[in-house]
Length: 259
Image 1 (spheres, rainbow, N blue to C red):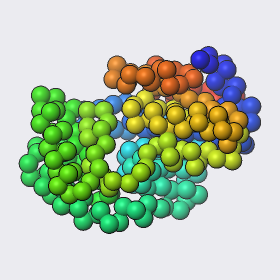
Image 2 (cartoon, one colour):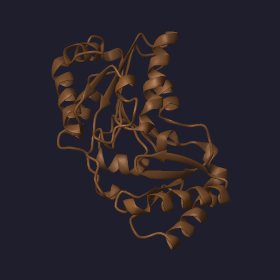
Image 3 (tube, rainbow, N blue to C red):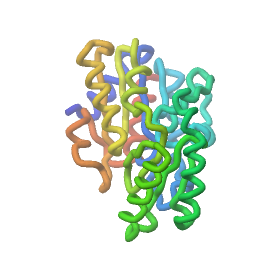
């Protein structure tokens, strides 16, 4: 486990050869009852902009739609990855994974069916590519909502992806944060990622694997702790911070050190 000074040192020794990525919800933004209300913490966008001007590559990898990330993190230099890799903005160019195209009609049909059967605030369509069902505001209906999601996914030939108090129905393609992170850090000396949820575990594993096979020299895995952190998060990372505020503070220290 790295202490704070060692973590900062690892991220600043070779800034032009360092690629740093962070999750959004629970990492740059506090977890809120209504997903649409989530916003980056004060200072988050500013420090990412500073880092994007100093490091080799800086970005956000999230389950959020690309449009949401772009709207709330208006930093042109950021690499943005939405929907776990199905949408990307790299060097200003927006790309949708072509493998989702055959499933878009099925996603639309699933959204229409779910919106009829579930209360407002549960169904979150995402860019027409996927749909997430949230039960944070309806914890007593968690099993019911999850079961309905699985049944509708099976009906329309969609995959099911579980996350924190939610389940996502999406095209059944092989994509996660780990796969996209592995691509984005390739060729850099240092690869880093900060995240807090089960969906971030593949990213941590991908960084460890990249360092093991030599595609990067050093992996820096930062876990953002919370009462809802998944089992195994602390064991999967090199450094931990106590919530999104502490992560932003760490990133500020990194930016200050480079200057």
